[in-house]
Image (cartoon, rainbow, N blue to C red):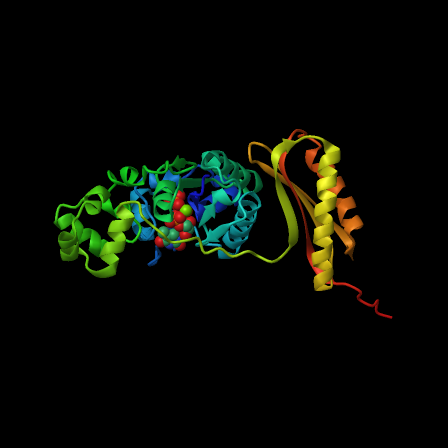
Length: 354
Ligand code: TTP
Ligand code: MG
């Protein structure tokens, strides 16, 4: 039995700048900085990849960015817009992989084995996440796949932009070993300086330090933890939060199913369970969503929002089944999963206002 978990770390590529390029197509591909005014004391929040070719980096002064590339376009940050895109990204990610720890606006960890316990499926699943994010938001992201957080995070940074790096189980330390020590999250500028001064330039050299040598460089628990991480050992679990904005059930089949009648029956069964949970809360729902997952892990969902809330199993099932037809309309074929959920909840048995 396979019980090891596989994690992906996802990080959006040049996130703020990528959003600005989507909002202003005329800027696409030109050197672009999101940040403060170069005439003042502004700094670069992020630069797109065209600007990075001139050596422009996050946290550099905008004035320096302008010196490096006089043609660079400066755009002030539009945080509300980035938050909106970020929400759309993470909503999409959660549809493909429900167990997620979102770390910041543009990065997070996904537990791939929550979808399929077979670690050999991890790459296909990560590709499905990447494709889904691109399809729903036009944003590009990079992923790293590994058995623990630190290795997944380092891996997601290896092939930016648009990259996917899979580190097979057992290869964690070997993957990290040749990298510069600064590639290891947790090594700040001061620790890096001390390590470099002692000739510890690679993650592998840090991993190989004995206890005494380590104590002399970075003492205490932090030192031990960083050496563990350098060895690809990181027991931190995902700190996941499940957003309770919808009530749903989904099921991954043991064998992919094509027969529409069987799929309807599954949806009816799940709709009945959803109805029970709605009734327990005393709620009705105005939105019904059917989700399908194809054998290549790609997902598709279709929703309907009704003028009035419903709460009966039959009504939910009726919508769920016609949404299934819609979802399969232009892409019929076998499915590995179907799910039904309801949202836009409202208290049931509201008396009409006289
Ligand atoms: P990052 O993921 O570090 O950078 P990025 O997404 O722009 O580029 P990359 O392709 O290398 O991942 O940070 C995410 C966003 O956070 C970034 O778009 C802007 C913001 N940010 C700042 O505002 N200040 C900073 O110093 C950094 C590093 C990021
Ligand atoms: Mg990023």
